[in-house]
Image (cartoon, rainbow, N blue to C red; front, side, top):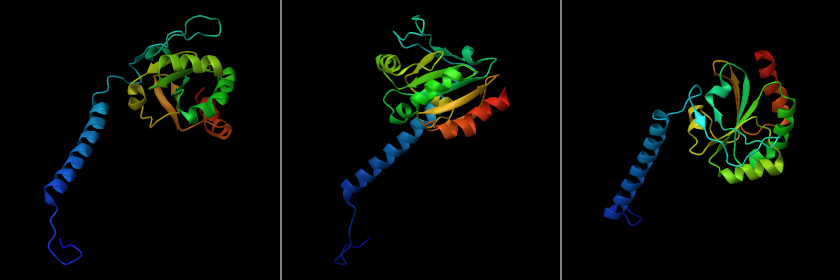
Amino acid sequence: MTDENGREASVGRRGFLLAAGAGLAAVAAIRADVASRLFNPLSLDSFELGPSPGLLDAAGRPLAGLSSTDLAGRRSVLNFWASWCPSCREEHQLLVEFARLCPVPVYGAAVRDAPDHVRDYLAQHGNPYAAVGLDSRALLQRALGARGVPTTFVIGPGPSIELALHGPLDPQILAARLLPALSKAG
């Protein structure tokens, strides 16, 4: 390699070490992602997400967390969300209205969110969920192949994923994809 004057240029020890360090960091990040997928203890048919302390249902009773037994043997909707997520906030009122009219239970998994933020957000903006589990390490989210929040799944008996919607719900997606999936399935 030559420099602008035609002289032989060398990378130097510092440049070599920086490049090697960047390469090792990239490999470590890839290995961490692969390890989290391979060694994830959760799956759709075996998980338990704890409740958000202080979160109450419409009758004032503590709202339960979410587990695979909630989804077993029946059709339901599972929404991954977070109080800090702008897209989740954007879809929230639509989800509240949908859950009120939905013929199947709607469950929530709060991803990487503080329990008090979950509680306060749902108390202030309405709670569309039959149960809310805290997916604090995003293990269930990753186990189901969700690429972020919000993500909404139609879960069929078994349990099995019948539909995955990545990104915020809007009236068009609700009418064109979610409602037909629930109609076909049920």
